[in-house]
Length: 183
Image 1 (tube, rainbow, N blue to C red):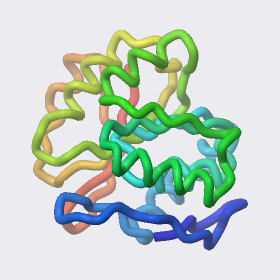
Image 2 (spheres, one colour):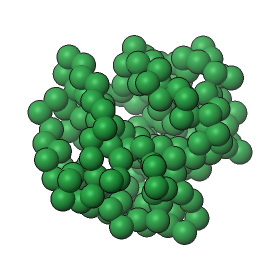
Image 3 (spheres, rainbow, N blue to C red):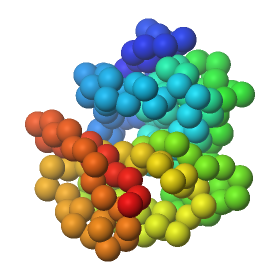
Image 4 (tube, helix red, strand yellow):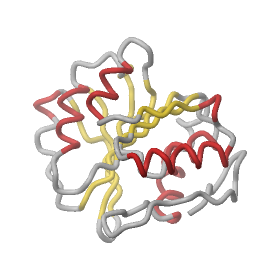
């Protein structure tokens, strides 16, 4: 796993070990960032369920002004800390080592994000909890883009009831990126 483009291009990142870990492949990460390349420079970027932190660090390398990571697992948070040090993004990043909802709550009134990326565990409906929280959150700007990496069969039919709409989808073999905005 590596940083693909930007100021830290080609730097290798550590990843987590284990059968439950499914890091985003470089190919899918490159496709994602090609789709949002115009929105990243100068943005405030929130990486939820951050894992190794590779998505947020890619955003930082590509010019995001500030990146916040939310990750509860100690081993993953340690991996993010290490990767922040390797990429030398200490001044441009913040790690919230807590569950995602309490991390979101702790950020209220301090930040507003241009892009929120989340890659929750598949099949546990944690993305629905995040959208439920965000529907009344001050963390969103009027045009904040929320990107969810999810299994292909994930149901997002509840989004309209919460005031969100899917503006784009990119499907891969086993998963998809769902692009969502408030309406």
